[in-house]
Length: 63
Image (cartoon, rainbow, N blue to C red; front, side):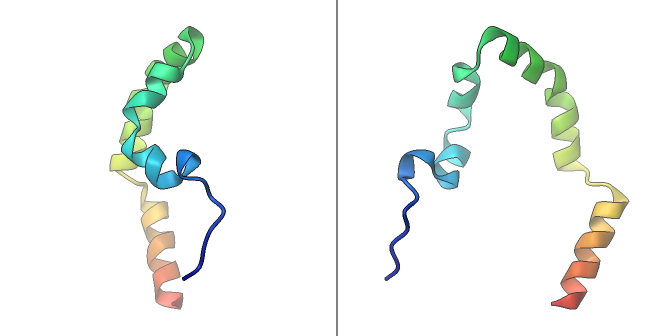
């Protein structure tokens, strides 16, 4: 078995499962900024552009 040096405290999996605590750790200005861009970020995640889809398909064809 291979052992990794990534601590579980800072692991990606830990960040993904505890995403609600991130907003609690932000300062007032950071929270305000995040709130102002949150809608646009969520839109990007839900509906990727046609160019993104084309690049994914082109890449998958090369595999």
